[in-house]
Length: 453
Image (cartoon, rainbow, N blue to C red; front, side, top):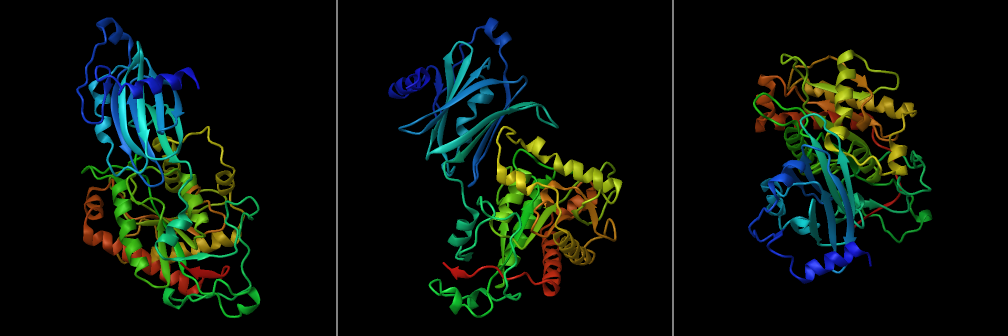
């Protein structure tokens, strides 16, 4: 056992001195840093906690870059972070109170002085985790940040989430993230089929020879509310956050899709937390999505910019300078939200390769035209045609993908409409009509045999 681990065990055994540590129960914070020491220490300006089923993120924002070390301790499970040159101030004192009982991974947090010039965070965990702790340089509205992402030891499987909902899952087909799976799933030999959930009665014990009829399945549509958590997206003049508007519209659209017995919807995020662009693409492929719809409400440099737009991925360049600017802005979400660049994921690397599948791009354009046509009945169109640019979130090589700009949140009039329940519902209904128009002419190919759980 390391010296640091033995030190933590002694602290826990002693109950962690109230004189030096903050307990979750709200024990008083006592500062005893000398005036001379305070001048040399950095102080926090903000602490934020973003709990989610996928992971919980803790962010410490400071005026200077923080030096840190971390390690895990077993029995009970704890994550320990030592912060060098940090002042134990009232901002840090608010951190324990930001952990809710509903957090899926964190029980409590204690913070206190471990030794001169070193603050120790002890995070008591509810389960085994795989933490990622890293720093981010100042960007946008943020200063230096230390990010602690607490992932479960066994990541949440989006297919299992669908199974718990009672939806169907595929049998006998390799998932895209398995080593032997091809980058693009080969179409099944069965003709296209689209059947209500109630009619799905495939026998899981039946042999392939007995399976002579059409394959019945639901159409899976992944909805991607833009931004979230550390990344607020665009902010309107009235103070509306793009991340909130996109989630609200996506949730309305999900309810409408799930009400149709032939379709089901999956959200890339269902709360206020950050999801990297590559992870959004990966989730769509892991649930074998038929369509991917990313929802945004962006801003432009001029407040008079207005109207709805639909974008698809470009294989050669942006269709306009505005489209190029917007793609660059959206692709910077990982810089703002914060991604650990040291993590190497071969699967994510594959999903972010430039597209070479012409068929997928053509289908994306067809879907985009259908949705844009319906949005024209709800709002003014910014451009009368589908635009193209290099959006990273649209780079799934085997899933037709579009990005919908519902309206410009930077336009005061459109910002007001975007926060209106009735208008959000009209937007969701228009997108759904566009999806149905596309599916009526382009039914998805059958995949492998399925079962109801």
